[in-house]
Length: 286
Ligand SMILES: [Fe+2]
Ligand SMILES: [Fe+2]
Image (cartoon, rainbow, N blue to C red; front, side):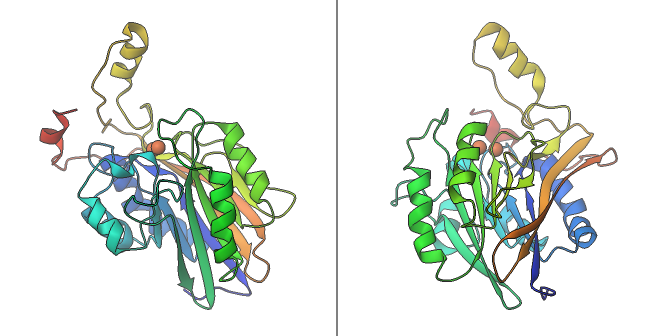
């Protein structure tokens, strides 16, 4: 779609969890795009596989078919090995840029909306995260050295646990990118705003999945784990109602500054999941 009057609107969605998240994406992504007059759609797909871990090439095609321009990810990107060849061959699925350079895939990409080039960066935070990734702040600096020569419209998905690290990176990049959005906690924060330098920010976009779950998983085993401190099997919660949350950010394409940020969450009481879970067998191994 052609951007109108130098304003580009982009919808960003938090972690899509398994079949419930995909069902919400399928039902509402086009509707949200229409409602907000959005030109582009970016979605975090790190939990979109049917067991809630990773993503497959079939699901990538599903996201693209349903209007996603770029799919970002995070720590769960390596869960399904099937995606490695997709990561090597395509640039519309990102893995965090600050993983070792030997990992398959890239952490930065661009796409075109009419005359506007849109840059997307995916980074992973370090605090309370298991992986020893490179410094996300300095990685952002080096990626921007290149990307700023291509465009001023740049969106950053910062996948991390803590509000402090996410806010720190947002302030660090304020005025240099159009938006910094947090993912990974699966809980949408109420702090969407535009920082003083013109960068839109939200600490976490939230998720798409079962509303009465914990991170999209059945809550009972997780509560049990808190009580017993013993390992449990995490299982996708497929019972409605379902939620999908994110933001729509409006960007001045000449300056790259954010003009407006509108958070939303959609709750659906109608979707019934009947599709057979093709990962049920594999899940026994977890
Ligand atoms: Fe996640
Ligand atoms: Fe994550």
